[in-house]
Length: 68
Image (tube, rainbow, N blue to C red; front, side, top):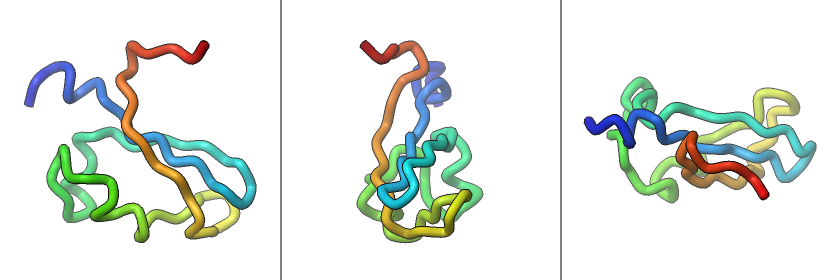
């Protein structure tokens, strides 16, 4: 796996309470998905760690990217 792929995160935002968290791309294997798997293949299984809602939005972001 390339260094760029290791620096990639999956950002998960709860649409219910607004909590935001991240998963490392490399950690997907712990959950039965291969790194680089389409988000659509696992997004329905994601749960907000604050409120327990399954209503979340997920997207990939490189650590070097900054919000503007």
